[in-house]
Image 1 (tube, rainbow, N blue to C red):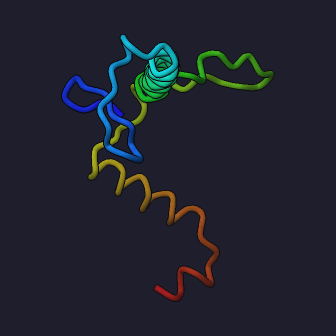
Image 2: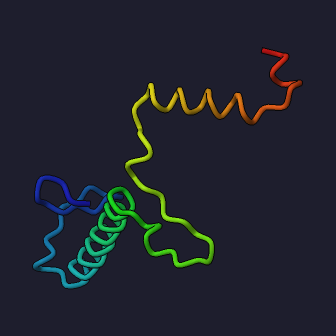
Length: 94
């Protein structure tokens, strides 16, 4: 584990120096590469438009301008959808 620029063995709390221990350096480098890759993939999912890669028949690309993540807009959309999609029996309960 890295804390404050120093490395420690998590189970014992012993400080280690990767410059002096090639085995520890290899493990640390491997872990750091995994973390870097995970963060890169996470950023791509969070900020990217992954659906742009779909080339399926019948797939129509959505225009990002047509949707909103604002609370009021979302609630209105949900209420409109609820009115359209519920069976009459469910509507009578409310």
